[in-house]
Length: 226
Image (cartoon, rainbow, N blue to C red; front, side):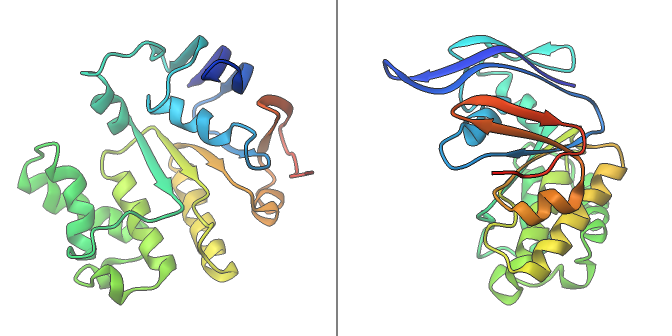
């Protein structure tokens, strides 16, 4: 599903963010990507959505070599990959329903499909009863659930969650992780980049640890040992 072949990323003359990354994430996996700040987690996730390009090596998603993806293909790639961030990036003047629908409107989806899909994804994240609320009227955990719903509208094969619980308390953190686990059970591949040791150790799934821009360990049922 996701393959990195000898990927190196260098900023400027000598700032090495990633060095010789060889990685294979299979379809349907839920993988935690861990490491201290500055180890390359964000750079790696940005390369998957072509926000950053490798200096060396090759990146494949499925049978698609995205290493030198052209600008016309980038929007299509990003519709195949749902993204969830620490900051929810919601539109404050749109309701929960409208925030999720907007992700479909901007790519020209028909109103009939929007009316069908949006209630489905709101049901998945448990927000059907708050579709008419505005972001300011719901909790931080609920705002993140809106962001997750928005990431699901294109039915992506992959979801990248970059510190999705960084702004949440422990109760909301557990709820968000349970939603991600449920989405993974539907067959969606999830790459979870996190600093949260408790999340990683509770999941008991595959853990890839970055250190100094290199893969320090890759364990099938690993723990966050840093």
